Length: 157
Image 1 (cartoon, one colour):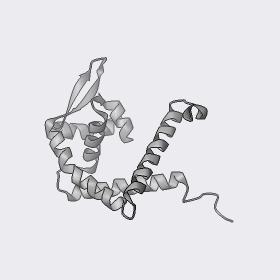
Image 2 (tube, one colour):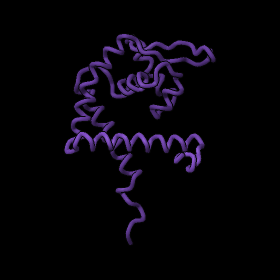
Image 3 (cartoon, one colour):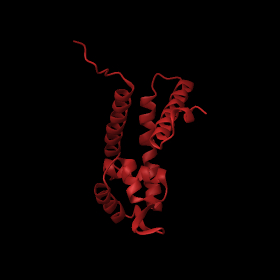
């Protein structure tokens, strides 16, 4: 009997690509000798993307629990790469802020990401790759909209 699971379906493909990109980026960060663990590098890049954001929001975006993130933030804070500042709306919560030292490290990480993008886009024409990225952004927006409660009809308007 044929399997009812299609290993080439959208969900499997996206999951496989995300896992491969993450593991390859982790390896390249380690090889680059930047003195960061893979999780520390991910934490810095997501914090840079998010701006000053609550620690709980950053944990959600990274797909980890708050306690796991806290351990990594402790190490980054000890190195002077992040600062925890009280949330002005909730003194029990902290906002994560990057320091200028983190900015310098993020700049040093850019060639690592660029080399992975070169390898990932091999065989694509520039316009094909740009179209692919545009489609991924639209998929992300569609799923975000569904997650936030918008109906399918509202997505097409």
